[in-house]
Image (cartoon, rainbow, N blue to C red; front, side):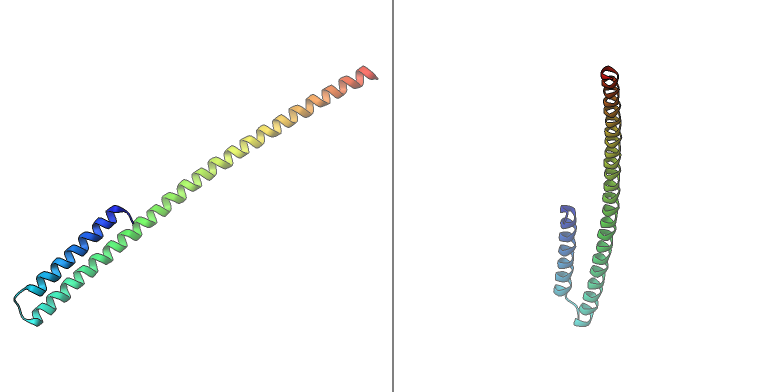
Length: 111
């Protein structure tokens, strides 16, 4: 978990604890306290739900970014390998031509 996420989680927990303490220590009837507690719990649940949705969005963005980077690097690697393959083919053709020329030279020389 990122440190920013830990801070937000800590703040949300602190706010919930503060609201709960305020509700429980407030001088009001039990029914009013229950309604306030239910409202606070609902608000806290909504905040947690929103934070979770934000984290899922962030994870999705990270996944897309990582996929793009991997794809880009793979393209670079494939391009490099293709270039080196072409270089190897050219070298092999040059060596074959040179060997052919030497063989022709020997053939003329010794024929």
